[in-house]
Length: 178
Image 1 (cartoon, rainbow, N blue to C red):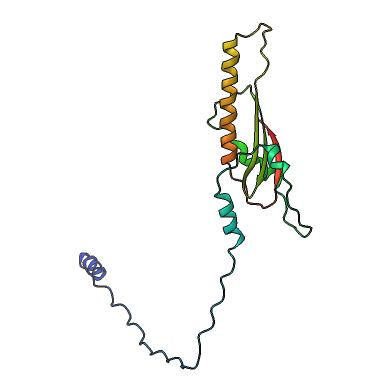
Image 2 (image 1 turned 90 degrees about the vertical axis):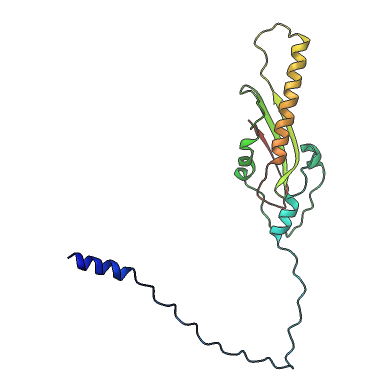
């Protein structure tokens, strides 16, 4: 029994079979001299995706929402490109307040114009609820509140301008309240 086990182990330890020999090479037939190479075709324009990448790599716009909509969008009668859907427009803004430390009680309104996958105009409005007390706030507290609102507004604006939407050559605009 032990001998059969040793024979089985010894059989497994044998050298692997040699690799199969490569097929013999056949010499390629030379091309006749009278056959000319086909003429080179001019390069085709880059695909639309490459243009979208170039458009999307531009620096973010600093225009406001109203300024972006004040310029007329060229419209072609034969243009059959669809606008982005509502879900495609607002879903990238889920992280707009990320890192801005905006209080939960604040109301944030974001007006955005989008084209070629990035924001071309943004206006952010941050409002705090009215104080419950009817007492007048000290001027330093009013100034501190205005400074905080300005910081939150700038942070949200920066986040929205850095957001990427699906590429689309049509201009879309929307308002979101968070």
